[in-house]
Amino acid sequence: MLRNGAAGGASSFSAIARPVRVWCDGCYDMVHYGHSNQLRQARAMGDYLIVGVHTDDEISKHKGPPVFTQEERYKMVKAIKWVDEIVQGAPYVTTLETLDKYNCDFCVHGDDITLTADGKDTYEEVKKAGRYRECKRTQGVSTTDLVGRMLLMTKAHHSNIIEDTDYRKHADNLGKCPKGHSPWTGVSQFLQTSQKIIQFASGKEPQPGDTIIYVAGAFDLFHVGHVDFLKRVHQIAKRPYIIVGLHFDQEVNLYKGKNYPIMNVHERTLSVLACRYVSEVVIGAPYSVTADLLDHFKVRMSFFLSFFLSFFLSFFLSFFLSFSLSIHTQTHTYIYITKILKSGS
Image (cartoon, rainbow, N blue to C red; front, side, top):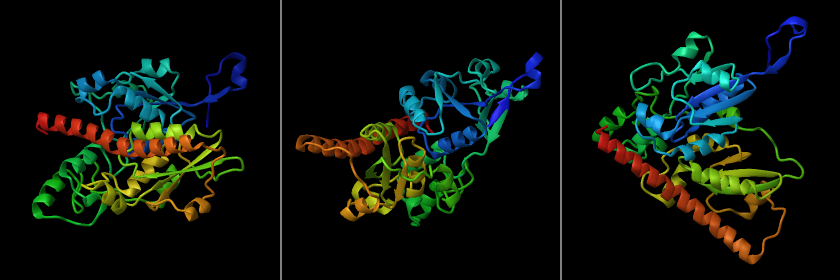
């Protein structure tokens, strides 16, 4: 998709084509597949996508303190495969000055309104100038919904169990009752479709010379720990083709307990597919990695490891997955829940 540049003089007879540059901005706190889908849609409207991420201070001023730090949020957005460039510390109010500074043709936002602390539309200026585009909000997910699942400690998002009337009453208010509707998204649970998977998947087959690497886990509430892990795995080979095996909800619940996973396997699939380091996802991968599985996907490594390095790598992967997926997520979850309780929400 190329945009014809402004013509003048001799150039009026031969328009100069240039890439269409698109601007998106936001908090991108507790990044989920809804954020990724918005950026996917925005990228499809042009040729180059620039994403501005607000600072902790800006978010605290207009919305309240974020869960993740700005550095963590920068890293999360940078890892989304449809993003070409990020701008750290983007202003909370989107202006024509910002669009012009980064040579962007227009900005894209979801079909929900964003307000400043004093109730003004943050996109008012660019809307009036005709440099604003909308994309569809992803139904079935929001940061509020995910926090609701944590607060309620329910498994309803990955099972059909309806526990009791008291649960149903409170769950319905937070949009997490299987028969209720979210006040934010209009639906109670995410409904997976083959079209959505196709939109997120790369569709690329492994090519001769690629090193096929297999990793597995829950990858629940996809966060910076996962991104760091996958980035390091991606650096192992010159031409990596990373396949991520995702365990079913029941499997994850067996080894993690409580109400894990917070996101069901279909939601986790989209979160992982949106990562630029991932080539393919196995939905419902077995907990134990077998020789048949490795043979089926032709998993191989193009280098040899010494016993010490093999032991260290195995220990690192095991430790990192268990520590990052549980401690890192639980710490941020605890902080966020504490903020909610203190605010009386």
